[in-house]
Picture 1: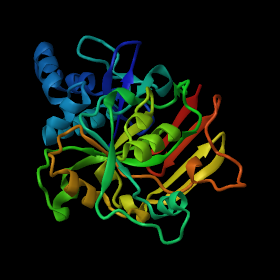
Picture 2: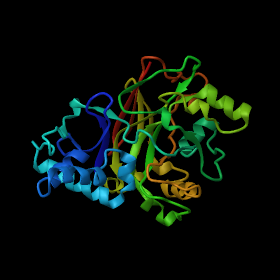
Picture 3: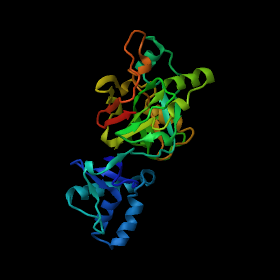
Picture 4: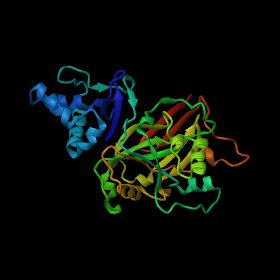
Length: 325
């Protein structure tokens, strides 16, 4: 299934499931309408709040109970294309009637891998045999940086060299504590797209001058665009067969395969489960080569500028667009 978080009107946040015709079914309202066929309206609404909550983290915490409610709600909506909620409220929306938000607007923990694609290691170190990290490394993204698809991100006034990074993001669906690699994928709920925007000067300064991996250079407002959808893992049989691409103003910049992970999804989930992972945590898995920071002397610079549009695409998930202002 494909889930979205959306705003049917300003200031209202709802959780929904995509239908085959591209419409969005409000999950709580649709499940309440289904239940109201057999039980009193108020009871149906009360049960729907528990079994099909509007908050994505509450939904993930509900596990298989909530997932089964979503399956039933989706089937009901597709069989009843004119359905309304128990009190006649609108529960089915065309894509143009709502604003899509980040599918996970406020991740609990957001751990973003660094130096995890061979092609990216090569371009950043300028050598065919780059030095590779001996264990998974990452930087922390703050939930306050997350924005949804088709958003405009302001370039900070101090930023001179702003970069883009298309990444496959893994959303955790079950509590994971010290899990082995052989079972790690069991704890994954699904996947979305993450654009790891970066102030390279700030990030490099933190690394070289501070002697540690950066934080501020990754965490300016809006520096974590995400979306457009959250796809359950059963829809993507082999995540390593996925291709990741980025374009700036239509020009292809990155075109890499998830097969080039140094540390795969199982490695990363297992490694970070040592601190404990919870439903609603997110792992960015790293970016392939083709970023602006990888350009060599004499090559046309690829730094982002005000007015640019960045498109991050992962097949079977979609396209995440971000405008820079």
